[in-house]
Length: 228
Image (spheres, rainbow, N blue to C red):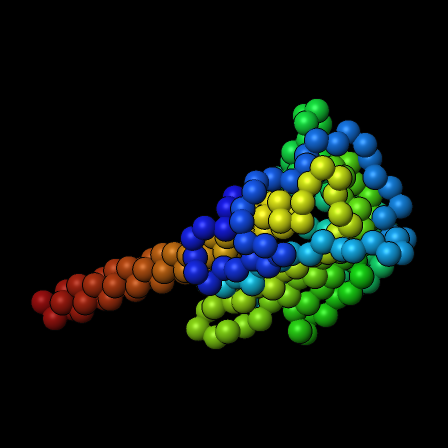
């Protein structure tokens, strides 16, 4: 997962050199109580602005389902709402999977709280309250904008406390790689569903036309018989 490829994709961080994955994959410690701000800590930041080509309605409805990641993200095994109502700020989800590989081979775990949700403007933000891969006070903001003509601008950014034995650039490179890969898979999924639906409708139309043609031919033969 790198920043190469589509020129419409951009990542933001303090420098431009790609230095690989951060050290977040090596910890065995579960990090709790992320919701309290640490005074004086300078946040690390990063994100993407990336254009995908698919239905914005379907892309938003699929990706904005706060407790539904396991339905479309292959690296998420489970995603369960444990507090509040989905799509309502204050909702808390717990996820397990392989989104953040661990050195000990165990599943990654995260507990996240929905901070804001604006369905009309297609925007949401969430806080990672607990995890077992070393992120502290991770907050992400996720937005979609309709560019017209089937083009969708995805603006996905994060801030997080500095990670021991890593750098801001490594963290930004890793996270933006995850973001881009996730959006490419979302784009492919939506277009695949659209293609399947179109093919199904086309087949239904073809079957109806074929049946209509058979009925017309049958009527013509009956008419010929009457004339004889």
